[in-house]
Amino acid sequence: MNRLPYENTGWVNVLAFSPDGKMLASGSTDKKVLLWDAATGEMLTSLTEHLNGIAALTFSSNGSTLASASTDGTIRFWNTENRSLLLTRITGHSEWMKAVTFLKDSSTLATAAFNGAITFWDLKTLQKSGTQMIGHRDLLPTLAFSPDGTKFASVGATGPVLFVAGFGTAVSRPPLDEFVRITDVKTGRELANLPANMTVENIAFSPDGKTVALGTAAIIRLWNTETGRIKTPIPDTKGNTINALAFSSDGKKLASGTWAGDVQVWNSETGDAVTSFAKVEPLEGDHDRDSIITLVFSSDGTMLAVGSNYIRILMLGSEKQIGFKQMRANRSVSVFTRYYRACYWA
Image (cartoon, rainbow, N blue to C red; front, side, top):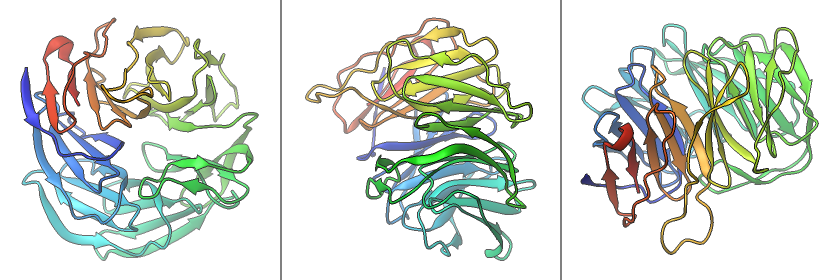
């Protein structure tokens, strides 16, 4: 077990693996982007140029560039090979950003803001090359791009939404729009919609973009957007709110995380639970459960990175039964263990 310096002092808001799965990027409410060696748990560098919390991260298709979007309205670009800040940056946003993705050959970047605006940026000129407003009214507390950046799924609110400052997470919201909507990113045309029936807390696309997972109060629904069919809902047997969802790269596995600190991996075809994880308990001195904020699979599906609101990142391997390694550690240090290919940063 190695103890490594850990520099996050805010909630882990977003995680992203590099395309080759060797590097993990994390973004937090403390304005920092950290790069980690996914195999060893070593922190490679701390990127600190943003003025507010990190809302989204995305790697270019070849993994050489990392884009980070912040609630300060800017997008920064980082060279992942020498871990340096690139001089290029985008500053033309007037609204908080929620999602960001490279398109096609990584020459264009698409961003999505809470007001429903999708903006396209030419990365050679750093100028806007187009804008789309999708059909929802007001703010979009829940949204996601498809992996290829051609589709956009969202649930809109019908009035003001209260967010955590610098974080981009809704903590109080009015009634939501009655539908989950799929929009063509380029044209803004609505491709499909589904009556929500209940509050949707999280949305995730399958790798082929055909299926959308919807996390609600205690149920995951898998929606085939081409046929309109809903697979048999996957229930959270403990009745916890589904707060985070992620598909594996082959689309066969779906990971879910809850506000109560549970993580589960499901067979996305059958809805059966395939991997059980122990509940993430709070650190000593904390009284609430360690809520799961974000999840992401590595490109080969052998690792699952989990980010929580107690400033922790856990890396879990693919064994059938793995528990979160419980350790007592000060929040200012990092703890790494090779036990079951699982590393735990506290």
